[in-house]
Length: 301
Image (cartoon, helix red, strand yellow):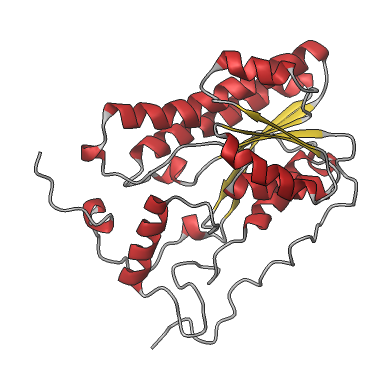
């Protein structure tokens, strides 16, 4: 018997295009979104565009930027883009020099793939830490230095992950990097608050989208098979909300944090995951080793 049968779960979100903020909230503002060409980054950029913001989307690959520019431009906003490896401070400075000063920076770009720690190469560790943590630092530093020099207010939003504080079996590289990002949020909120710069974190839960990597998709599929997560009424029984999130819900949270209505919120991390990271049952499920979760055989050295 399905123990969630008949339970409503959290209500579905309003439709795409809805907003809790007044139209024109970001008129005259430029919002820079790293990793803005795909997935959650593009969803966040779209919600800023719906509220009047101009956009500057950044990606390492031009092939991600063209389709995103076309799609976002349909929302009636001006969309610029730049190819940028956020590990390269010189290229970052060039991007900032070539565009008007952004008012909002959303650090969404990150690297991630599931791997048992014993199988992780030093290069794999370094690549994820360099993109996720160092890239976030370099983008934020360039953004902050320019606003400090100009004495202009600004907002930084760093996209994090709940395993920054819970730990992330199978994602040791990403969990460590995201823990660093979380610390950066708290540190810079204090350092830069006197200069009018807000720094906040934003943590998504499971929000499926078409740009998810094959590694992540495969891991989710294995988890669904193992847990029979889908109930007969379509509920996702792994989630306290009995549903997964929609990418636009992350965008709504981001626009709020950067809006005039959140001016006294800084150094905070807003979690948008339907309480999934806090899930704790009276009866714990059996432990499944990470290697088995990822479909890998025994470790042979």
